[in-house]
Image (cartoon, rainbow, N blue to C red; front, side, top):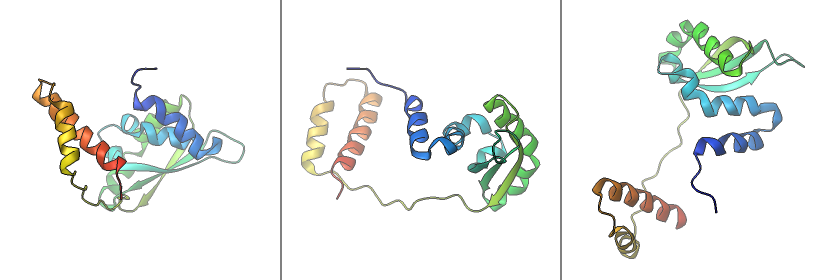
Length: 153
């Protein structure tokens, strides 16, 4: 039995499998975007597409999806974004950035279902031996989430 693994170690292979060889670079870019983009304007845009001229792996175009309110600032920041993305790839993969002005996609969230009294009791019993209140609270939050996902209606 292996120990816990970092989520980042799992995301790349899953994205590669889901997106296929042709779009693996976009999957990697999406997975690592917060580290690539940083806290500036690029952090308010999301990679939406990546295209290269036929048969080449350079001279590409990165399409970013950005809120219209942020688009102008992101447009002015494109040279820095290009440098960061090309640095991520390790060579001059991209020549330009194309902006798509659209609100970020957000899925509608429904409120989480309340746990049954039995589930709450089981969770309290399982966490009774933990002395650290902060750790107990975080584990309780995790336990509630697991119960909700395991018993979806």
